[in-house]
Amino acid sequence: MGMDDIIKKADVLIEALPYIRNFYDKVVVIKYGGAAMTDEKIRRNVLEDIVFMSYVGMRPVLVHGGGPFVSKRIEALGKESKFVQGYRVTDEQTMAIAEEEFMKINRDIVREITSLGGSAITVSGKDDTVIEVKKHPPIDGEDIGYVGEIQKINRDVVEKMIIGDIIPVIPPIGVGDDGHAYNINADQVAAHIAASLGALKMVLLTNVGGILEDIKDPLSRIAHVDASQVGELIASGVVSGGMVPKVRACLQALEGGVKKTHIVDVGVPHALLLEIFTDKGIGTEIVKTI
Ligand code: ADP
Ligand code: MG
Image 1 (cartoon, rainbow, N blue to C red):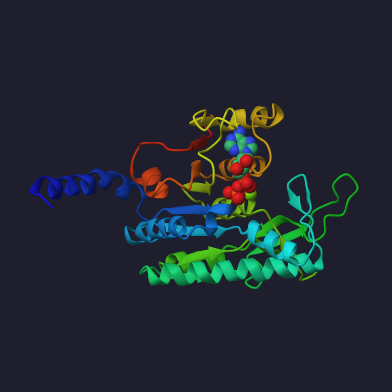
Image 2 (image 1 turned 135 degrees about the horizontal axis):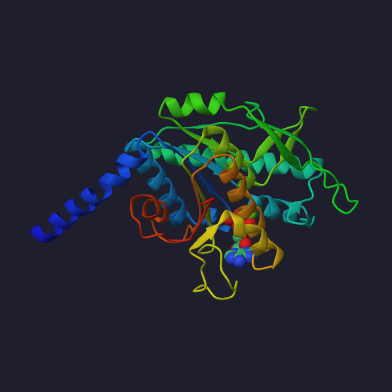
């Protein structure tokens, strides 16, 4: 490496300094889910970024999903995954499988963070009673089973971990007042956790480059959305499917006091670091200006 390259490296570090100072000691909640979880390289990238954030004094909290893994197991049993308005219809057996799969992913993430030199721990919405839910009411008269609506976050356990510089890794499972496990959309978990911790930022990592004006055109990214525009984006159908709980989660987080929310493509190498340590603004940011 020539002298010029070495100096450029120093420049990059110095450029990051104001961002590092701004984010020092601040809580950032990151949600990572979907198909991109199966790609080892992408996953390593994300976890490296999170370990980096933790080493420069930020307090990252990781919420993960895992729906595709559950679907695969259900299909292997010769059953079909069934969704109603984006919610997985969750019978007893599906919930047991979901719990197994989520905890397996969770352990893998914790292990990988550790191997990258960070410290992480499982914080379970159910066993640590961090996420209290009530059963989701029937949709169009259909009972959707063990699907939970978040009622309350008991943040103490999460707070203890972040104060100790340990990265909490949280699966999307809550506990009902019947003591049963309930399936929750992980975007919603991230929003409630972020609000309860007074997070500065919430970043939803996904498999698209943010909110697209036209879902078939990757170049039609909407870079900036105000909270007041979210309702219209859903009503007009621009935002549909899995993007609906995401924008709703952003709105919920903002209403809970989170300053900024982002929907970012996890496939961009080091998307998280770019989002946090530069003003390049990748993805879509949703903020509340009024
Ligand atoms: P994750 O697993 O990360 O939660 P989801 O599949 O639940 O991802 O949600 C992301 C999906 O939302 C995209 O892959 C896309 O199919 C869909 N989607 C619907 N409307 C839009 C939109 N306007 N812009 C981008 N994605 C959209
Ligand atoms: Mg989703």
